Image 1: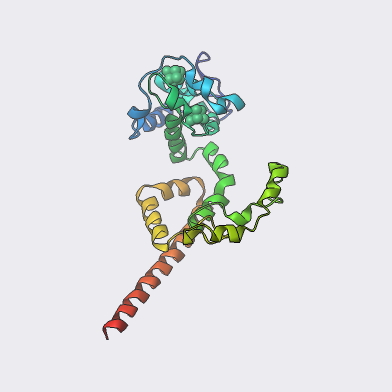
Image 2: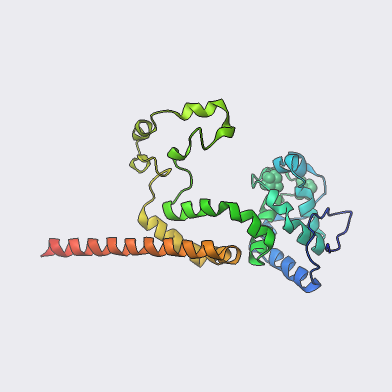
Amino acid sequence: MNAHVNPQIADPVSSGNEISREKLEEIFEDIRSHAVYDHEIHGCLNCGICTATCPSAHYYDYSPREIIQLVWTENLEGIYDAMQEKIWACAQCYTCAARCPFENSPGGLVMIMREVAIKHEMESAKEVLRPFSRVLLKVVSTGNQLAPNMITKEAFPDWGPNVAKVDAPLMILRKAIPMPTMHTLDTAWEVNLRTSVELYTIWEATGVLDQLEAVDENLFDVVQDVMDEKREEWEEWLEEQDDDEDDDDA
Ligand code: SF4
Ligand code: SF4
């Protein structure tokens, strides 16, 4: 059964189970108490300028004006329904924030709602994030996502005839870049091991890994293994440096 929604404000798309009032209030409170909530919403004229300039509104059944209105009018059912699908249509380009006469940021508000959807382990979050598990794993294990040798005619047939232009001597071109960290085709650039390990610490401290565990436990386990390996490599490297220093002192 759909949650009840004020038809003048929301246009629900979900067909989920009935949800308790307490749960709806808990979700709304998580949105409103977010550290940047007051920065993202200051009222709303309902003028629609954000929607008129929003690229996602052009292609999807999505409207930043609707999202802001749902939150501003505290339409708890509508907020919950929007979190089932609509909030995942935002491209996070922030054109809306640049245009809004009230200095609202519908895109920023959507980001808060996505965090809350993940916190509450909503099925919509799991479904949206599932196709990105390989991307996340690549970022965790190499420090970045795309690599030059991934861009081939076969991998991107939808790019049309211009993709043939990437048939260039990529390694020679890469070697011409002054930064040695880019003299590779396996990753976009080589990431320092220490940087990777520091990033893992940040992800742990900021709750990013807890969020990952909430939406994809299997991926979380794989990521943990990669992190453990990298941390061991880093410890071994530090020990080698200590040994070298001892040898120099001897
Ligand atoms: S968020 Fe801003 S631009 Fe969008 S409808 Fe409200 S006041 Fe207008
Ligand atoms: S940030 Fe999202 S809501 Fe704002 S204009 Fe871009 S796609 Fe639309």
